Length: 322
Ligand SMILES: C[S@@+](CC[C@H](N)C(=O)[O-])C[C@H]1O[C@@H](n2cnc3c(N)ncnc32)[C@H](O)[C@@H]1O
Image (cartoon, rainbow, N blue to C red; front, side, top):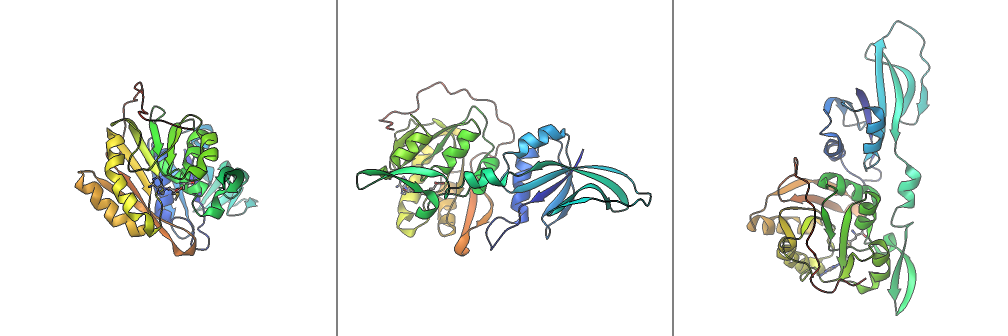
């Protein structure tokens, strides 16, 4: 079946390039006979074939971050009729003319802007402790929460299986846990900052602990996948570098990690993993406000297909405190 894909437009230099939006789409739909027929970088759309019914396309698409809409295309020869498509912003529905053909376009999926906004860190209330008192805070204002789109992007690149145990050791305002829960995945999380405890324990009851990433209360070889966004500021640089062997220790031999990292730390992080004998895949760069550029790295065996792993052994060896 033919589909037309519209990627989100980058605004004010914030967002991802066409290639990354395409990589995210390929990560989600790559196993369903995906063939790219045509693409327009400038207009950020592409036409593809997929061996998937519209209802299935819609359900998989709900996980995408940087795809705005998917239209189903049905073509017929054009015989000179007057066509009256209905305009829907960047695309039209109904009969349109395309390259000498008459094409009927139907919206299969349109991203739900309201729910994206509702889940954004600057809208999602999060309880913290300040001066011994609990109070409501919002991620954005503290400048340490990821956008919903970026979190979805990381999950899509990571391709977790339902049996994976996922760790975010720099949990912050819980963006990664929040998305994992929406997807029904098992996510455990930690952060060194105790003030985040109320919000994080609410998001991950019984699966959150206060810990410095350099000494995690986890058994060796216990984690399938680490998805995380380490702190960006230079003051944290040493801690991030020192965390690498510890994360590696907690990871299963075939485990993987997906990081969104500060560009300043990228090279040193890559070198540290390569010294440990790990393959680092540079996925691309996400642009943030203020000209900040954030590389995304994938470390470990790149998953094509993995056997389902059922987690049986206890994973926490020292006090996992809510
Ligand atoms: C960029 S934020 C993560 C934001 C998170 N991805 C979100 O969407 O809310 C980085 C977090 O790392 C934590 N952190 C800094 N140094 C740490 C350390 N040594 N061990 C564990 N966590 C640390 C900070 O407290 C901060 O919450």
